[in-house]
Image (tube, rainbow over all chains, first blue to last red; front, side):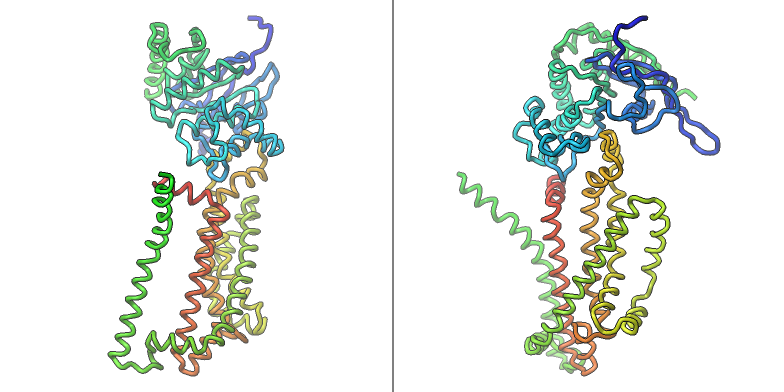
Length: 264
Length: 270
């Protein structure tokens, strides 16, 4: 297959194994490969403990791969962090910083002056439904708002690829649905490229252009499914026949993987 | 309507201060009254055990002398504790940045706590005389350990995910320290500070007791030698008062320096 432009991000043959001592080796990732086009939203699902977070840490430059490469725009960037903005599972908003100070943290760390960093973050508060909460502290915000602030902190860094590690995992299901539909809305207005880790199949289908299913450990890509649903997506779409079809396919693949991970 | 809300909310914080102070105050009052009654009813010699009333009376009469001896003790305490804090912060930061130093220093720090101050303090007088220096050293010796350990522990208790977030933003070790490790450690620091300040006053009294020109410690020693039990106990009461004041000051400092801590804690529990 010949492509005119390289994908925004591409993982090639990523392997990761840990030494357990006594000469034992645990292989976590075994030849993980997938890519995302510019502006594409890719969701990654897999059995729990399959190494999704390790994969993210490698992408974010926090851990090194045993082998394999990561490419951004066709250039090898393995081990570099500056292309990725990372949003961890926990919101990790610091209680000693106001919401504005928390959201501008990444720019400040990158060497931007406080004034410029805060002005850039402040300009996004309206779009993230956080207007008026600039000087509030994290403990004064609801779970959903905290998660939006954490996403703002991720997005405002202006990195090329967003890495979202189960951003809504800790929210109650009502707030989670709200957040998904909100994210879907902001998404359609921006040209972000993102990789999302999730346990929630419906969340993956609803938000993503493509869903990558990882196998049980050691993980490799078991299925790479394009979600061909029009955007913007309404919540009512989640009850359509097409949606249910995707859900069945993903569920079947995942179940197969979960079963094989339990086998001796 | 607006007024009624203000009126309703205003007494709340005062109530908490009052309700915090009332039980210990009542307990103290009960103890003092029992003591007074027991001494008067039992006809105990004042030189053995004076009544609270006598302690108050004699202490008030000797107030100028007691005050003149309180000032140097307070001065030594604050200076010694300042030295202790400087040493603790320096050590803790060095140890936080260097695993090698951690392995080299932490066992020595622990060992330093095995030094019996009761044996060292008189030697300090022989080495450094009756002035300020031996007191400052003793106070620093007894207080730097809890503060250092509190700080090291606080730095280490930083959320690993928070460190990873900072790393993903491109923060080097120094920036990780300034943006996350340092603020994360401040609540532990204030806890350690409270333990330290309580030891500091006792350390000052102790250092003076074995030899000083002035101070509450040497005053107590002299009064004991002239069988003025009442004035010894008056000086003890002043010492306790000073300790409590310094202890409360740490809360004031905590509120001023990390206001977010108590607010965040309150919102989690309520």
